[in-house]
Length: 332
Figure (cartoon, rainbow, N blue to C red):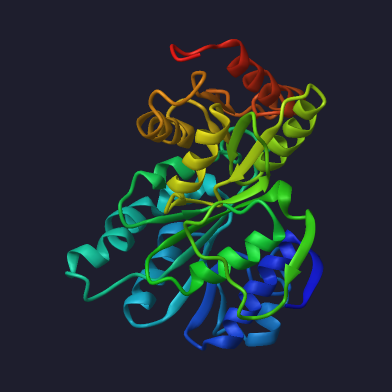
């Protein structure tokens, strides 16, 4: 399969481009997604496919998602963009009580095959209302699928799967990863199945479980731990719903230690559910309590020096991993 080096932004653009070309039911809608204003993953697509398939919308998140749901019911495959994840709450009713429930409310006769792309701006000093990482909200909603890629390859493959999935998918992009480069298959048929984690780095002594941007912190922490003769395995979940319980449990069972890392706040975050699953599945097999490293439970500061103290870092992950070696379970 032919591959090309590209940024995350280019990989997402390729996925959207190929989906638009492959299926006339696919269309995009959102704020400032059409040329000449488009500067992100949708750049150039309205010029290529026209304004009837790449639609600039008014500034109304509820209208964007509501229109997407209506179009999906009518047989189309809409890809809606919520520019900043903090604003997704305005469309929460549409997502939670309409899109996620449609299959159940119609006895399986009607689905809502919509993809909602949204971006997290955390880490760019954008302040408390433009930087939140809120995927945990939607993990809690039966009927929603939640996807958070960490690499251009995963971005392209997972977005392709989301667009053609018959259920509503929330696709969370991280602005800090948009310029990250990697090798991406350019074949239109390339897709990554939802619900399949990937081991980004093998290891034997401790498992670092993460997704999205914080995978890169976990990989940096693993390199630091290697200098201390600690072999860390890094598991990239890639999708939170469906969750690849088998892969993460199998890894933690081998290493007997686990550290969960994410940019969402630690309190009530995705790591709490993941830790509960590990504890239930591996009770008596782990050598130490499960550690969690997440964003601190504070509104995000606008000052860069303060904001840098909020998010996980390789040093905080290393410290958490080290604690799992100082803690000893009843079984030793």
